[in-house]
Amino acid sequence: MSDQEAAKLNAEAAPHPRDEIPASELARAIGPEADADLHGDPDDPDPTPSATEASTMTAWRVAKALLALRIQVDALAPRRNKASDGTIGDRRHESSASDHNPWVRDGATGVVTAMDITHSPDLGCDAGTLAAAFREQRDPRIKYIIWNRRIANSSAVGGAPAWGWRRYTGANPHDHHIHISVKPEPASYDSQTAWALPASLKTVPVS
Image (cartoon, rainbow, N blue to C red):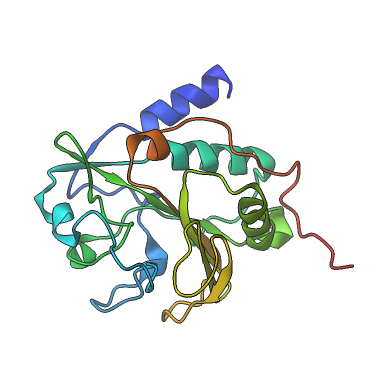
């Protein structure tokens, strides 16, 4: 990561007051309705932390591992569409079990451990290429990913092996963006180790 990229990451990782959500960080793909698809793993037997944690936070920030990922994606696809990008959900969803809530506690600050990245194959960012790279590399920071009506957890859940695809039945099919959740431990969510991404995020032809 260059000095300029590191400075950008640190600036974006600065805490915000709980009710201050920059437009670039709002997880727009969740939807405005109270019972919207919250991009969680329905087969996770013990989602952690408690869903009530988010309501107690007075400030929030985005996990540094995810900010580092976004910087790398932007470098590989600088013209990509960002219409479905986002990290944090709004107040209507904070009592639900979603990694888009700032429910991981870092002192008095809540950490958002989920990110959506827009599927933009015509502008160099194919979410399917990203999903394939994540599953191939099995980065230990990842908790689960959701893409195109399927979900893959880094642990064996729901009758599927670790990293195996399962059908995703949430209201949002996730065909306009990929969802990435990272684990709730600081060594995972704040790791700035470079992500093992391919040299190009363009669509990979099917042979």
